[in-house]
Amino acid sequence: MLRNFFKAALRNLIRYKTFSFINLAGLAIGLACFVFIALFIQDELSYDRFHQKRDRIYRLVSIERDGDGTTGTARVSAQWGPALQEAIPEISASVRFRFYGRTLVSSGDTHFYESNCLFADSTLFEIFTFPMLHGNPKTALAAPNSVVLTEALAHKYFGDENPVGKNLRFDNQVSYQVTGVVENVPDNSHFRFDFLVSFATYEFWDLDVWTVNNFHKYLLLAPGTSAEAVEAKIPALLKSRMGEDDFNAMETVQRLQPLTRIHLHSHLFREFEPNSDIAYVYLFAAIAFFVLLIACINFMNLSTARASKRTREVGMRKAVGAQRRPLM
Image (cartoon, rainbow, N blue to C red):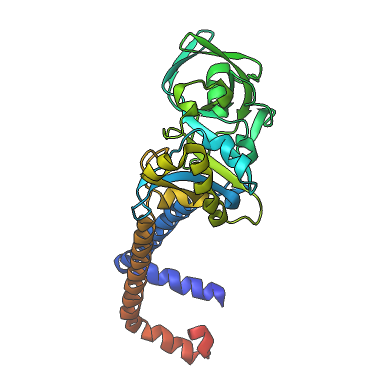
């Protein structure tokens, strides 16, 4: 029976070539558009979800005091690092990032200008999931003048050999020892890097200033802790460190952003890189379903229009005893 059905379908396709091509091509193109848009939406919604502790990771940002919560800066003062954990026990760990800047990196006769480098605290690997291929994640960024490379950058400077223990020279001035190699940062991360320099190396004027926002700050909250409870304790801490007059003069307040909402919902000044927008996800989802609906309607209309040409086939099937279900 199935063989007979396939025969009839093939004969009809061959007999009405142009009609079949238009009908099937329209449905195939509609399905392809739907699938491609669905893959784009899936990628947008997957940002930062590869981190194992993603539900407990938050970014500390500065929001304009009298704004609507959408304006402000994604950076805060370096002083938020040790101060927060001392004053708020609900915070399990924290990490600060600071752009290193464009630098000439050298290893032997290999020299390249690199710009995708960050200073990072040694607690980075307690919070984020960046699998380490070589080195110890607990100590890799603990000592000054330590650097952790991504797999791609390690191959660029050292080939296939294990670079741990070797040195890289920055701007022909400072030598950094390679203490670890991590897997390449996934594309669906709202921040990326090629190598990390230990924060213990950082010694600049803005390290001890409360009012200068040059650092990206992430927190790992203890299990069961709400972001609102932590936010409520921040003003008292800031007032005690800055003084009431300076605190009242501030034009911003500190808020916690869930890690998985940053890519689609945060558009603050000084983001790591421009983020996308949840509005695009809704727009493309609507377009995908509309294209699929049009393709299905078009396919059904053309198929219905051709059905009248198959009355002879239906009559013959009935004459030889075909039942209702096979006819359908």
